[in-house]
Length: 255
Length: 246
Image 1 (cartoon, chains in turn orange, green):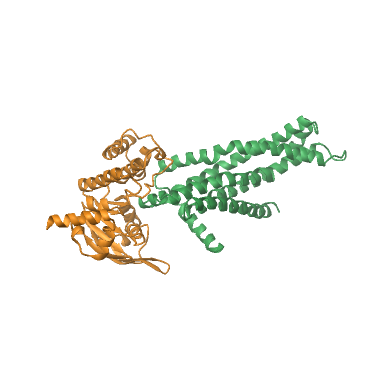
Image 2: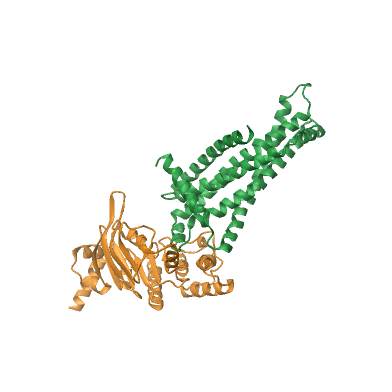
């Protein structure tokens, strides 16, 4: 579980995060949604330690990451898996080397043991026979799957995904969403996903946090987002006519 | 950002680079790859240019010493000194600053803008140490060998030019090359090479690592890196010459 307490972060005179508090549960897919510029990416990067917050606290199963010494910080980082928006695969390395990289850096396992783990993770993301390919030879969806395999290879306790299905076709986007959701439940990982995609919200949003202007404007589940009367959430989530109709149909059905 | 801030940031970067590598076998793999990418792949161009420039130096010297009062062996002597003292260490380093410097900036810069460096940081890896230290070590260790080869090829180029043009005899040239051997001059050239190699690895790495923006910014950073590395090599050349030879 990750607890965020009164998090503030700014750049120069611009305050981006204005005292966000939130809880992300283990074994659940926790979604952060909001308009562009609402502070989602800064929030996510603060959670994983790429931005240092000005004030506030982030507790990882009760441990504050701001109070870690160097060794604790290194160990904590090994508990984190991250899927970047553009996959961030090392383009000079093959798929196999990309996934094996954290194992090479942080374990003393033999090559055979590492390769077994890599193959297991690649199979888990439905990517076999691609071990020797370079990232440039893969489609966007396949690159995302390699990124997920790399993120889970160290058995992380926390998985962070920055817009994991951006730039993907709807079918592949759903596959990626379902894969993350399954992995989260299977390994009881605390997963935090930053997304714009309303399909993801409806499909896998077990807990949703809506950010607006650097503040938490709403919190709930994908069931609750249908029923909410919160104006800012309704304006954002149901901005398209299709979603308006879907919501109306849902509300009529539960009446 | 003013120049002083850049200097400060550059030295702070160096403190992160020179740390114990987190995993020896990964570092060793990276080091061999960098020796190949930054060193062996530069052999061809450096030796090709050295050979022809050596030839041109010998021809120019011969054409400008067209008097019976000066012995022909002076051509070989002058060519040897020019090549060892300046051409091989300085001119070749400037060529390498262009070739290798732009490669280092663009590869690290691309890693920055595609979040590959963020990925390393999230994993808990010191990205500067992981990416730049093998490059520094590869250039500092390999470039002295490269420059010695450049010296040999340059001097050989002068000899071939003389023989083919008939402006001086092979024997006169060899007598000149063998005259007044001073091993310190080679040491001086190699000291310069090590300093230049360090600049060639670290200045472009700085420009690539701290790039902000997209592909255009990476291109601009590569140009800036080559310009600044060249400027620093020229300044370092002057200072080292002043310190070591006067």
